[in-house]
Image 1: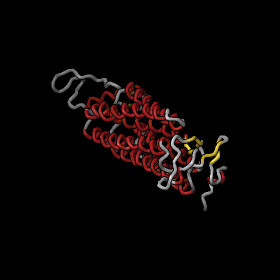
Image 2: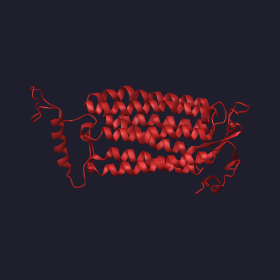
Image 3: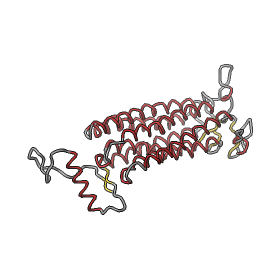
Image 4: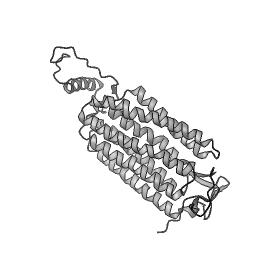
Length: 317
């Protein structure tokens, strides 16, 4: 069956008309086909992650739910982009021309997918939540890091919608926010993860390093696409699509594999099931906390020191 999304949604060649303007620099059918392929991968991965959650008790499914939500939102965003929707034409700062320039960027208005940023506004905080909960980071630090992440995404969107050189000011704000997030993930959170056990530390280090490495490539993609109008929208879709596949389905698989034998209570997460009385959860948490720290008996450690039964950052739901 032929892909007629570009025609069906009112964007016949050679232009893509939206909001009373036309973006001559837009995706082709080849680009749309690629977006459909990514949509399928995101959707299938969502069902896989949800399916894997049923292998766990209800109180142990938090990371499955978060990870499945990431790919579900991404699937909807890529469905929208494959349909050539969720975009608007923006005049480029650098009109390209000449024999050595891609002919697909040699016009004035470029198609900007704002739905991509809506996706990132939802999914990047969820990615950070997956990571920082794994590290056992305190909630105030998690929330503040997510706020900085939102600043990073919003400034990227505003910059993409600006025609003038002022777009690079927003790009700089976004990069500064990213460096803050990267510092939290690479330095601060890793210190918390390192004291929770070798398995938790290993899972966090692998997933954290993977995420930050990939996130360093996104500003490069932005500079070549929305920022500098260097590569075509089809190439943009491939660049961002590969990064998103690595940062979402592959990240999710790595994270859930690492969590397969990790009890949420070890991370300070205590989720009550519907058939469990809150007082029983408290007793179980205290008992589990004692067992995890070895040699605790009635609040006294085997070396005779008084034990502390409250875990900093512990959350009971």
